[in-house]
Image (cartoon, rainbow, N blue to C red; front, top):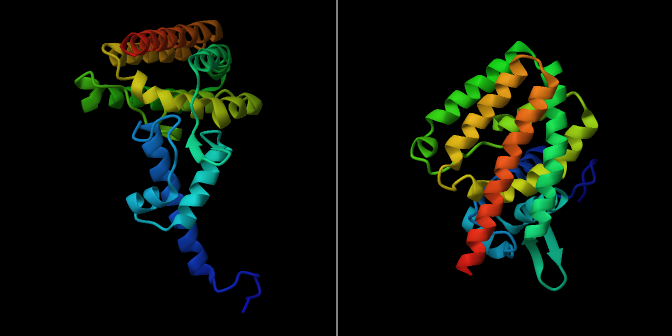
Length: 236
């Protein structure tokens, strides 16, 4: 029998549990993808992932659908859902686009960031420098959203269209590869220093310096990608 809300057999608490399970599945699945446990191009087995995360297939299916909306998952005819995989050319093209757009965002942020925003970035970098992964040179790992250096600067740029372009698709796609690339020998410490240069440019409220610092950082990241690609080609 249906209730007044048209949902059969579900009261408010049951719907809340279903939503929480879906959210939990999304967090776990996204983490596994971003940290490389599930590789680009790998098929997503609903039954296998449901067992792995200890949840039913319904919430998992919803989580996969949300990641599909973020362009992190694609569906292939007769093969099901797979983590999206970028060709080398696609990835390099994406990095070129990122350099221009994020340089612009950093330039705008230099005029809009508050003292609290800048202090937050400095505190964030101090914490990044103290992580075990950074201290041992194993990698430069950041949380998503508010825990991500680049996301914080982007949110302060004040241009909703620019935020949408970078956040909704480009950042998600790049995070597929960011975890592995941050583990290249010597790159974690370099990236941290480059982040500090960006904050210094933001501190003096110089749009041109902020743009240049961000672009220099992203060009270094692109060089790391090219080195990774060359190493992958040699090993294959």
